[in-house]
Structure formats: structure tokens, C-alpha cells
Length: 441
Ligand code: ATP
Image (cartoon, rainbow, N blue to C red; front, side, top):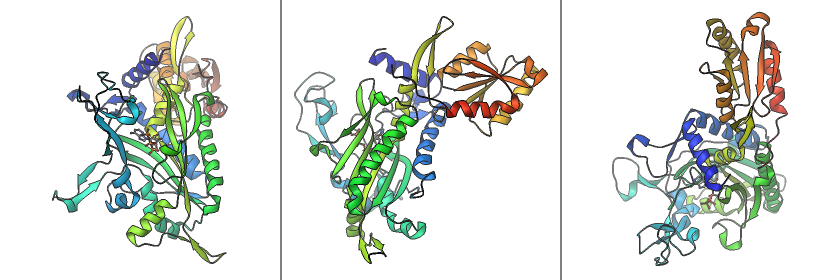
């Protein structure tokens, strides 16, 4: 499959089956913004749950917060975002299009002209006004990253959670950047979701934890179904480093157009805590009782994008194979990531079968994300579920009414087994636990 082919297929599937729609479509769309439909919402939630589960729930040393999107502009002054969170903007003098200078290598991608203006720094933060007066005192910004919420709440969390370094504060949620050139579907949008964790460590342990976290984060993508061959770790060059970082690596994914970042892991040093301490006057330190000294922890930050990662999961999972002489498209998603995990299907729309299938749905929907579908032939319904990545289909037929058994069909192999209704949940759970990612094509 060619690069454009695959992207076209993913974008069309996303729209047709209710993963991602262009936003405000009835008004002609709105500048690279997207709305998530029923399946996309479920899948995005699963991506975030898989992250939260690994980064917070299963760890004794990380806690979560949920900070405000609109907050004091002093945060962005202290963090350096007002002065430094910029991209180099150039105008094409010929066609008047605007570009991010570091993305185009001196040639306008629209008209091919090399007559470009000098690059100037364009701040990516969205500005707005809080309250009824639109004056300077009312200016506020939509957060361009979630990280600062963790730094400004450092003392609150330290005081209420009884954690001590090394420990982390995690958050996921919307961030906003006025990107000069959004594009490649949901890869780069102006409104997107991030999943970030700030891990506070004694300064002399920072290098060790930096390696720990980028290895751990790489493994997370593999465990959730992205083949290792589609991932790589790329250290930043010195001139690429953000204003706060002494070391950064990106975890990159092989998108159809080439390698692109999914997540950055940075050693942010004590930059942020010190900056906020200096600007606010608050003491943002940890008092170590053992040595009777205070210090400002260093921070290792794994910063991932939820929406971009969801897209990577879709691309990695998309395959076409042949079943019964027909081409079938199938999303081989990890059962943890798939928007629906089980589809309950009565063989035909007959009252007794539908009633029994409703019972099976009620039974299974406590353990799995379930879909229910009674339209079309069973073969077509299997194909529809394959196309949206549902790993298991449970079919209720006439034999079910006689002996209480159902068939469980596996998405990846299309094989079917017959089990009693009591055993369905454990049979499916066992298949899910044994699931392995597809070999990259
Ligand atoms: P880029 O260089 O692509 O602009 P970045 O290095 O500025 O990205 P970070 O600030 O490290 O990105 O943000 C962490 C993660 O947030 C990124 O790895 C990405 O997954 C996600 N992200 C950042 N900007 C966007 C965006 N405009 N749209 C979607 N996801 C984004």
C-alpha cells in the first residue's frame, strides 16, 4: 500500500465508521479541527486509560491531578512560554501563504517559490480575555501544555500526598497551540490532548531516571500493540532542545509519510520549579529530613500526545487480508485499545434470539466494552466488526436457545469456538490476555 493510499483509507474509514469527523462539516469544516465520533471517543478514552493505568494506577510513586486550562498568565511568563514558545514563521512573497520555516527548507510547498520573508518568531499560545472587559489586565492564555499545572501545584501535592522524591505528578487533558501549519489528519491540530507526567528526582539521580523513563515509555507502545519495527528512539540534537531541557529523546512512529514524534522524554532539570519560585515568591523545594537539607528536585518528563497516539494505533493496526476469497480490511488493535471489545450478535432478528442476545449483552457489558448489532447478514456484521477492530464477536443462534451455548469468533484468525454462556467472559478474557501484535507489513 502506498503512502497516500494508506492515509486515504484511514481517513475514510475514520469518517465512515465514526472514529473522527471533520469538525463543523455542515458549515464546510473549520481549519483542520476534528470531532471524535462514537468509536473514536471510545478508542481515545482507551488510549488514555491505558496510559493512566500504567503511569498512575499501578504505581506507588505517581499521583494524578486535573488542573485548569485557563489560569494565571503569570504561569506562562515564569515558564518562559510567553518569550520562547514560538515557531519560526515565514511568508511566501509570491502566493502569500505562511509556513513554519523549519518544515519547508526554503521552498514554498504551495507554489515552489524561494522568495520567502525572513523568519520571525510566532508565539503559539492562544490568547483570550477573562471577564467582561477586553483590556490588558484581562488577558489569559489557553494552556499550550499540561506540564505547568504540575509545577505550580508541586507544594500542594507534596503537602497532601505524603510523597517524596523520586515521585511523579501526572495529568492528561486538552492543550492548545496556534500551529502555523496543522495537518496530516489529527497528527498536528490546534486543539489536542496530551498525557504528561513530571517525575521529581534528587538532582544526582536525574540521568538514571531519564533512561528509565524513555525505555519504559517505548515499551508501553509495544505492549499496547505497535510493532517494534514501527518505533524508534531519537535523541535531540543540541540545537533542537527546548529552552528548559538538557536532554530530550523522542519516541517516533513510522507514519505513512515518514518518522514523526509520538512522545518526548526530557530532562527539564530544576528549570521550572526555580522559575516559578522566583516569579511567585513561593518555596518550591523538598526538605529531606534524613540529611536535614532542602533541595530543588530535577524533573524527568515523559510528554505524549493522546490524539496523535490514537492515530498511530490506527495506522499500525490497519491490515487487509483475504477471507473466503474476499478482501477484508481489519484493524488488529490490542483488545485494550479497540473501541469495542465484544460485539453481541443475534444470528437473525427473531424475537427469541434478540431477547437472548440482550441477556448476553447485559452479562458481558459489565466486563467488556460491548456493541450490539442485529442488522444485515451475520457475515456482513463480522466484516463490519473486523473493520473497526472488535476483537471478539459472540453470536446467539438457535442452538443457544436449546443448550445455552454461543459461538465466539476471533477477529484476527476468524476461527470460532462454541462455549457455554457461563464460560464466555473467561474465554474472551483468556484470548485477550494472550493477544500479540501483528507483524508489521
Ligand atoms: P512538534 O515538534 O511536532 O511541534 P513538540 O516537540 O512541540 O511537537 P511537545 O511539546 O514535546 O511537542 O508535546 C508532547 C506531545 O504532544 C508530542 O509528542 C505530540 O504527541 C503531542 N503534540 C504536540 N503538539 C501537537 C499538536 N499540534 N497536535 C497533536 N499533538 C500534538
